[in-house]
Length: 116
Image (cartoon, rainbow, N blue to C red):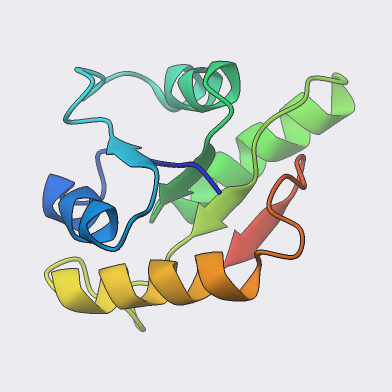
């Protein structure tokens, strides 16, 4: 499962996941910081990466718009700040690692949203 972390997540999360053998990049690393959410989702889709974010409100709207327009998008993984605070890098890494391992049976399912 290939992941793309938007600018809501620290690039340290990507580093931690790569140390665990995961294929992950962050918006910080590819120069996409401050791009609009739609551009972030487009980048993820073009690169066949599931997008990880804390921005539930905007990405739920985008997912709905893209779905209704027949545009395919990668899985959007929404982090819950109440469970995984932004400053808790280790907790984010562990949660995403657990997700990748437990969802390995269907890594390419697209056009959906999941919560962590």
